Length: 295
Ligand SMILES: NC(=O)c1ccc[n+]([C@@H]2O[C@H](COP(=O)([O-])OP(=O)(O)OC[C@H]3O[C@@H](n4cnc5c(N)ncnc54)[C@H](OP(=O)(O)O)[C@@H]3O)[C@@H](O)[C@H]2O)c1
Image (cartoon, rainbow, N blue to C red; front, side, top):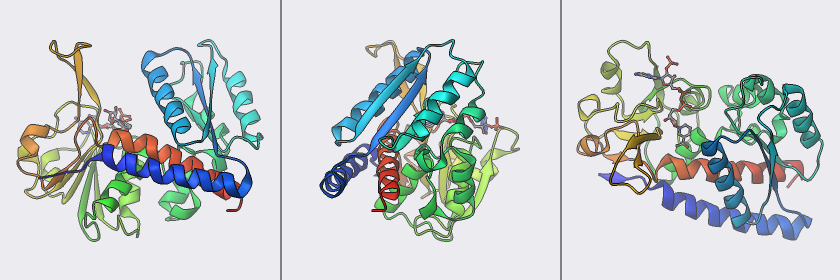
């Protein structure tokens, strides 16, 4: 079975992006800038933000983190976002989710200028994706990373049956719509499954490409997968492991051991989709800089 190595591909991609950032600097004297807003002190979110900011700097981009207190009002957050919308040194704006309960996440998403929405969460960007204008939108980073992996591993997608399990706005819905597009790493027949789907294995067993994003450790077992299928595991789940240094380890939504005996190719967790998500955030930030500078 082929292991689809997101860690390696993301490193290759980051090297390519670094070269492009250097080129931007030579041409314009400036580099792309990403500003991340984090509200509150959720340790997991703080970790994600640190990682995003560090990776940005590694490839020569400017990254700024705005830390706002947990009691921040929706109005204050929106004002901060609007100031960034008008700041020419900011090419990408990312509002780290989740937000405290007094702030409506959709309102915050709508406040980000779509031309700086490098997360691809704004309805204008998702709408353009659905309409097939992939070169005129930001594709949300996790689905975009999966598309990139499929492309770089030359996985045949045209006319294949892609089954996406999970329909979140963040992953499943964008993913399914992306695989539907007449794009060289997509062009699939698509089925979407969710928590109300009856007899889910009836669908998953028909998948040539199975993409799973539900947040349930080891949910997809070998008997649910067609022989030779390509399996993309988006899930990141913490399970207790007394032998691990911090008492837990990360696993995906797919039973890796079992399914690796059936699938022809598969992403591991960790080291599959996860590292690609950050790499695509950087790619989108570069893209935003290029568009805003007419490069
Ligand atoms: N690798 C990465 O970079 C990355 C990025 C984002 C997310 N993730 C991970 O991906 C997983 C999913 O994330 P998310 O944000 O999409 O989660 P989410 O918002 O909780 O959505 C989960 C989706 O899975 C569906 N679902 C839940 N249980 C199911 C079941 N038993 N059978 C079928 N469908 C079921 C839900 O259906 P309903 O709509 O019917 O409730 C929902 O559509 C999580 O583990 C998350 O940590 C990874």
